[in-house]
Image (cartoon, rainbow, N blue to C red; front, side):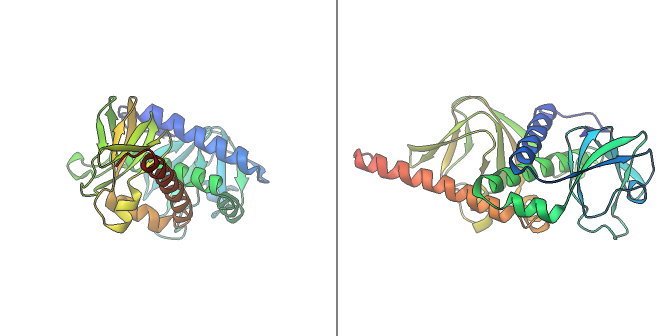
Length: 267
């Protein structure tokens, strides 16, 4: 994905993670697909691109416009998900200034396969989180800076606190580099690593943070404001399955660690 504005610090690392997530997910799912070769056009939906399908950019670039304004560009390795409202007046338009090669997937088949097992669901959810963070970042870079409420990048050194137990949940965090300890009542009860989504449970349940998350190594995260996270959930309901799977796995790991510590006489 290519921004028309000046990229922000950390953007390149986030893009690398996104393309890696797309590649790993599609390789895991091994779905049938069809190659689509399109000529340069100012409206790819009338030149052979089908609304409602999902496309992987193989070669070339696909520009995205809304209400006549160029927003950003998809490039090689990007997954183009269908517009939620393709017939709306403000729906997205796709353009190509040169020939482009795409790989076409049936969206329903893709989603069903992504949610067919726990690991695929986790990979699907993380990819959507990363893509949404990138999109909101790109769109905000073209708006009035005084009105921007977008995902922010944050960096933590070893020992820094990312989430504090008892705090109000204003953000959901996506950890895209590093690892961190999970601490409950000053006791280390687990660890989280690259690709994990942190803090979603507190946001969804409107509860204070149930644990502290402290950087073990240098960590890079995307901070998604809670309102935007809820909007993302509503517009991508399939994420719920992956998030629940991810959080259930995290809770199980924490419970196992707590039981282990209790057996050792640690309170």
